[in-house]
Image (cartoon, rainbow, N blue to C red; front, side):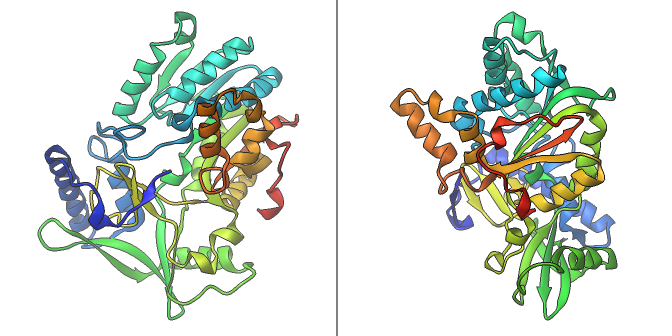
Length: 387
C-alpha cells in the first residue's frame, strides 16, 4: 500500500524519466490527433500502460518494491506466498497439472510458492508465468535462478495465454485493477464519459462528452438495483474489459481454480455515495495520487475492482464462484497465525491482515471449473451473498 500524496508533493522526474514520459505523451497526442482531437480515457489508459516499448508495463522501469512505485502483498512478506502455496497444494492434490501466474511481479511469490510446494511434496508439473513487462521478466529470471536447479526447470515464461487448456491453478495478484477502464460522471442527470485531449505544449487535458448509448445502457443496468440514490456530480469507473479477460482465462482452464487477489468491493459498496470521486489511483515512487495525466508512462494507473462484475463474467464463462473473502480471512483460513514465529514476521502479518493496511481493502475470489472440493482459504469467511 502507498501513502496518499498531492501531485505537487510527488518526487520530481529524473531526466531519463522525463524524456521517456515526453515520448509517451508525443505518441498519445498523435493518437488523439488521429482520433479527431479526443481519445476515450479507456484508450488513453491502455496506451499509457501497455503501448509496445513505451507504456508503463511494456518499457523497462523499476516498478515494485524498494525503489519502485508500489508494494504488493508478496513483497510485504513471504507469509502471503506460503499461504497461497498451501491453497495451491490443496487444489493440485485434486487436479494435478500446473500453476499459471499472470503478472508475477519480481518473481518473489513464484519462488516462495515453489519452495513451499517442494517442502510439501506437492510440486506442479510446471510453473508458467505470463509477463508483459520486460523489466519484471528480467527480475523474475534473476529470482528464479536463485532456486535449486530442480525447481528452476519447472518455470517457463509465456508471452500469451497457452493454447492448450490446463489443469491446476491460475494466480492473478493485482492484475484486474490495471485493466483499462472508463471514467464516468453523472452531471445534471446526464451520463458523461471522460476522455483526453491535447493541451498546450506537451500537456494532456481531460474533457467529458455524453456517453454512448451502449455505455449509458450498461450504467443503467449496473446502478438500477442499488439500494440508494447516487448524488449529483458523481464520478466513478466502469471496466468493460473484465468479461473478455475472464472469458479468455476460462478458455485456458480445463479443470481447476483461479485465485484473483485485488483491492475492490462488491457492486453495492463500489458504487456508493461516499465514493463520489471514484477509485482511480496512480502510483509513483511509493506515493499514491489521483492525476493520471502527469508522469505519463512512468507511473501506474489503477482502479478498484467491481467484484460483482467479475462474478457475472465468471457465470457467463461457465465458471463457478467458489469463494469470496477479504485477504485477512483468506490468510487466516490458511493458518497464517501459525507461521508467525518472531517479531519481524508479526509486523509483516499485521500489514497483511489489519483493516487499516491490506486486510480488508484487498479481496480474494476463487473461480472454478470442474472443481467442487472445499478450499481452506474461504473457510473463515464467505462474502458471496454481497455479490
